[in-house]
Image (cartoon, rainbow, N blue to C red; front, side):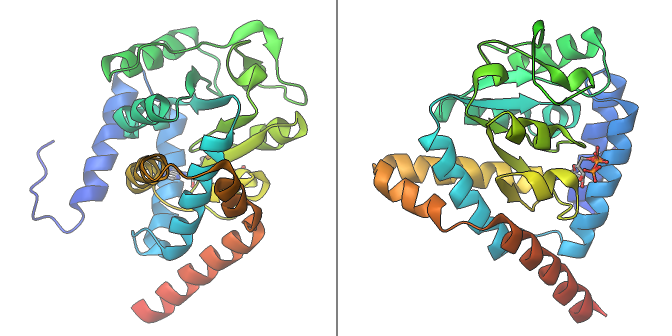
Length: 250
Ligand code: ATP
């Protein structure tokens, strides 16, 4: 579909096109369309902008990614559809492994996601393995790669659904997520939640990491940045930002 650039909802409509196209290509699932719709609704409440609050989380997430001993980026269909180049760029700059992990069991779709990441510049994409399972999880999401999520200390899980974040935390890992819904179980359980649209947050996360690297920020400083972080406060402030935005709109 051709969308004129002058359309007031150009960015949002283009994003919908990306998801719809990814469903057609077998990268995202039909359920991904529903998850995207939920995200859009929260983005509307947020005013479709990156808030100061989200910028704070992005800075701490960048610091934690750099402090990690073994960081891994978990990719599902929607994340692959919306920000493949940025996720690959993040994996190269940290550096961190990329691993496919989806809720609805489908080897075919897992391979489609891998192929899509490789088309977008990834050199290596890990796949879940049957013999390596994350404890406290029942779904297809429990399978992990022994050189990836299974041994990671920090896992980046943008647009995560349900209970995996809680399970990863119970397995002793730190979790960073991007989730427009501050009320989701993932947002509440993650170590760091970036309440923002993945399309806006990813370039900022990459820039923040590049900045820390170019300034040769010490481990001590990175630890200090992480030490003052309070995820519950971030979620409450995000809800307040939505409230303020709504009141000022009407
Ligand atoms: P809960 O944890 O409440 O059970 P869920 O498992 O139902 O949530 P999904 O509907 O699968 O969650 O969606 C995953 C999350 O991704 C949602 O919280 C949604 O708000 C968020 N989301 C969807 N699209 C985007 C996007 N473009 N950027 C950031 N977050 C998004």
